[in-house]
Image 1 (cartoon, rainbow, N blue to C red):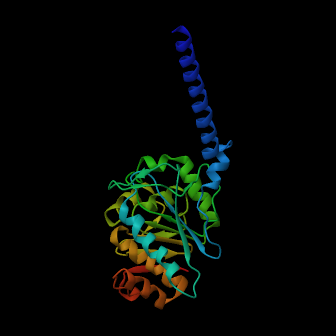
Image 2: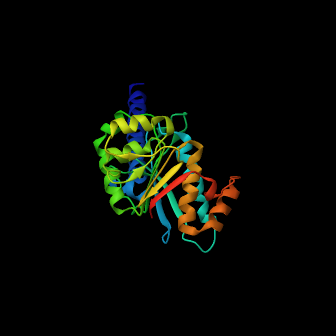
Length: 255
């Protein structure tokens, strides 16, 4: 009886060791020996010959200011004879972020740790804390400053303009923001030229918009600027938007 008990104990130990080795090997196969390398390998592969458009997201980002321009820009891949856009999201994590409305999103890139592609167009949608705690995020503000240096265009929607202002990007730029927050922005950044009664302002490389559903208009304007009226109207038609730039209250300072 004692021999049988010892034999069963040996079998049990052997099984535990074998399972442990198999799990270890499986882990190495799945994640690799260098986590940073695996992280880079898992990054999206962006087609070349396109504008790279980065959407800065974080917890509390508002759905509309994110998805409105995202829809417009992403649909450029279905138009012929133009340079379309690679659209992707960047955050300070690769883990899920939760929008103000509760939508959970997995960011494509972590701007803190990942090697990012060159950003041609930076989009800063509005988020819940863009008037307070987000403006104290020095790493995020530094990322915006860095991305803006290389970007051909920097766009904001709604209170995303507060982030650009905090980063010092609007110091000599005419801008706008969410209508009811214009007074707050003027008080917070009294040296800036903040305009009202317009849906978007284009000044140099910066396009700031009132946000909300009107984020569509600012995105369509940039497409019209890059691709012409016919392409912009076709993008609008695909989303059942009545697009006519002449009917949209806007301000162009310096193209």
